[in-house]
Image 1: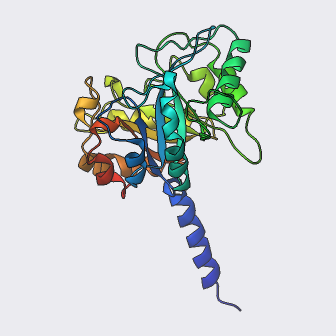
Image 2 (image 1 turned 180 degrees about the vertical axis):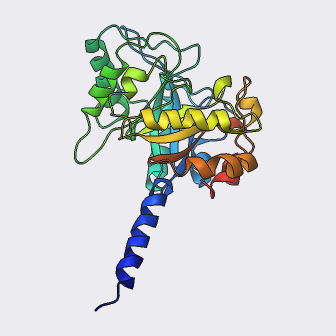
Image 3 (image 1 turned 180 degrees about the horizontal axis):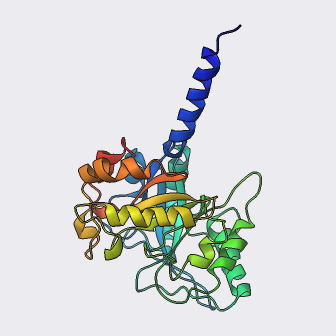
Length: 298
């Protein structure tokens, strides 16, 4: 009778791979574009710390408004000054980094849409100006971004599900349009729940900051309870990320976790979550050492 050892060994390997599959390929996402002191996009990508870079923000769109791209003092879109980022974006992508455009942002954004048809028009604008379409006024020139991020925190929650469907419809077998969302930690998110529940979002980076009911408070009990709630509620397509401030100053209302506490008290649990994707950090200005301290542990 042949030995059963090889079969048992292969079964062990299979089960072990399955257990740890969720953390394979995990990475750090970072928002870039809101402070002139945060360093260049080129240096951000060259750091080797990030798997996803979210260019922030397209602050105005929909309801007949002229779209407005605000990248702080990095460049001036209205005078075609951001086209200098074209080669930079392409080089980031050549190094394996997905680069997405983030919609919305903070209190100064104007992002409401008036109808499903309006959402489709916004999607067409995004496709032609930032993705694989054609336009004479592309803010980043010939660079083709990997997708669109939804960071909607103000205004109406209507029609973002329609926007997600329309953007997803531009995916082809040659080029996928990736979608990501940055909901607040309280569940369901007041602005993005309907969009997220379409099941079209590849990445969901949940903001575990400026939301006291989700904060780490010396113990991870509340944070982990909310994390499990999100993990069970997200559609099966979505990878789930823990969104954190890169320093206490980056989130005045709280939520900062020291790298040591994150590594010892939080990551061992969340890394076992199916579809765990990594960490999202806010914001780049304060991320001097945080990402380097955690990147080998995520």
